[in-house]
Picture 1 (cartoon, one colour):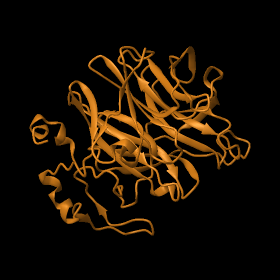
Picture 2: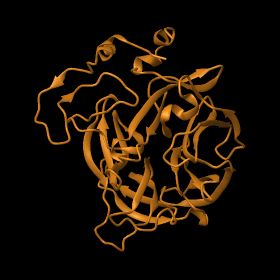
Picture 3: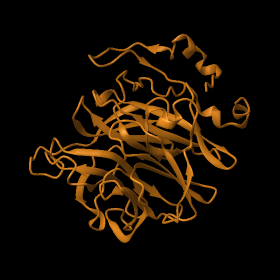
Length: 342
């Protein structure tokens, strides 16, 4: 399905936006001003460098969005990056939010894996709290820990706090969710990814409480949790390594369930392989009712830095979230007038 709007008609002719004159580094192109989303295409920051924020999530602070993600080299990982934006299209590189330690004995020593970072703000402590899936240097995927870091600013630098297995459970692919009442939850794959669990966090968001429950055991990972209309929705991926697979959608009336399987929310070409991607986050769009952006990664295991981003609008058909493929789109999609064009 293709949704073309006036601001992006030039894309059909290969014109993204007007270039801004600036010096180009070895890994950059002339900076441009983006006017919308092009799922799966190269996405450049405001300095003309390819955005490097994989497996990430987005936090809104005031009127500024912050995008956190894995900083990937061709095969290695180099910490957690952060970008800022006012419009979700154009992202300024703010630096490395969490840097690996030069101490080879440290939990986050250079060479470790810090995957799927998510950041939430704790109103009680005034701290920005980052959680991530941590694997220790040289240990493969045997550690299966959750790592925690904090900062006084959304851009960091974040200071490492600790890592652990929540309530003794293995913790790999993960997400964070803060509910309307301020309660925060850590959703994570456990038991070699065969279990998907949810743990309520402590009031300071720095550790898991013993309120920790199995949601279901279907060999799922890449959880992305969101809420609308009083119901909780959860998109997950199967476990096929870097290869794409079919997504599933679950629904519940409460965070701890029970959760009911609704099926695959993707529709359109390549839907059964999640359009070649894997879920990482569902972003609420403020000021718009029932407006959410599905965020996914199209992994490239031969060059992880070149993994692409799939950002697509969540639609509601017969009251159920669905995600159609769009070659390009912008936020006007969520206006009723735009939806009538589909």
